Length: 567
Image (tube, rainbow, N blue to C red; front, side):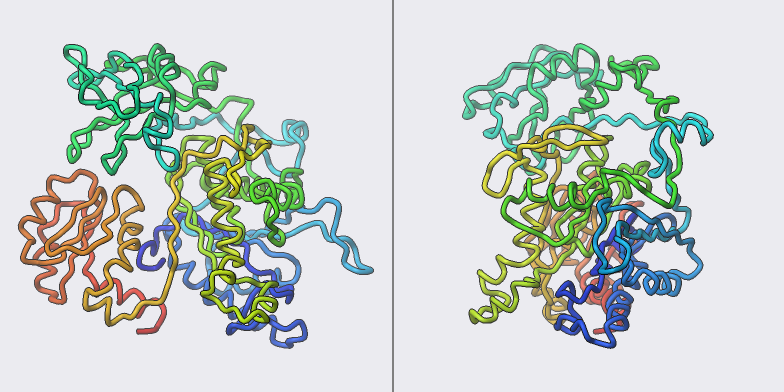
């Protein structure tokens, strides 16, 4: 994470072990015994190491750390945060997560948890329509209404991405859109090309136009996100437009207005401020009196944050027959994140105690609501927790198929994220319920999201240094460049150029490498493999403005030496 995202993370949301001493976390590979007199010290040491790295990952200009906790460690955590994040503003929110109450022996029933928010740089809790405590009627009576502002209207890429995105998956959503490339105008909408084996090159475009097809980033045939009838209706209203031209692939992209924004346009929440030369409307979304922003209070009491109904019970809908202890309410995490990334449609959100995957799920919800392209990184181990003793008794160990299948990641995290995206349970059944509260739609609709799963392992630094482990660290190079487009997975004798980054494997090919980079639009990073500093500087000095240079494998290995104190 330090090599790929140091200083780049906009929001870290974590729900760490609460130190219940009920097999919820390990210290030095052993679960902490309930009678351990050093349990609090061990928990603090466990958290300190991770929070120090988290501080280095957060964007120093503007970012936020969010940590949830209960009463067992809330005060110690507060002191630890003050120590590590000294000088940064911190708040603690009290949030009701179990209105019915959880018994505490002869003591009062416990209904709440706590959320620490550490503000880095210019970070602020942006407003919304809910202060999380008052009713809407109380809010209108007691609070001033801020001046209206505007919300950006986003035009989304019309090509389907992620799962179910091939031509064969929805053959009637493979059709041409005829455009005038000079005027950058949509002229007409073609018919679906059937059967699925039909060659698109046989389609004749009308005079003065070219055909734009839904072609995926790897060059394969995909499909549009909307059927022909839907695109035709959008075109009639000017709500489909010509996007950017990719010089590398020689293809045009197409953009359209999301269904939610079309509905806002119909309701008058989005207004038309004129028309472009291409025949598309100039859209503006003012924040009206009904949705004026209010800042949240530090006590939250919302039915949607009920962990039993919208954490445990909701998770069962996605993973029937599988359980996970105390998952967060999906809507509670969504609301918390919204206060800090609502105005950041490209935010990077990290959760390194991913658990059941609620944070990733909440980011998907936020993206759907406003057409954002926020990225979520979820990190988890694959511990078997309460099943460990039974598996050990059977002679099994980590690495055995049966053992690993019972781990948190394989049994819950990955299948939950897959189910959220596809709208189907691991058994392939559509999820028969609907999301509620902020955005109501069937869970079976899924999300327009892409997901990659990686297994993290320890690597021999000597093999990395000798350029003998490129395939193992290749995903990290792709992630550092933004996790977008094609990934370079194999080493070559010269160089490779992908959508957002390039790798020079041999400095003897530097002239051709630099020429290829000049022709590639949108390139962010050039990785240069060499053990010679002079050669590295010679190539790096000729890179175009805006292209970052990284020396492999020196920069990669030095990251771990500097940030962890280990070679």
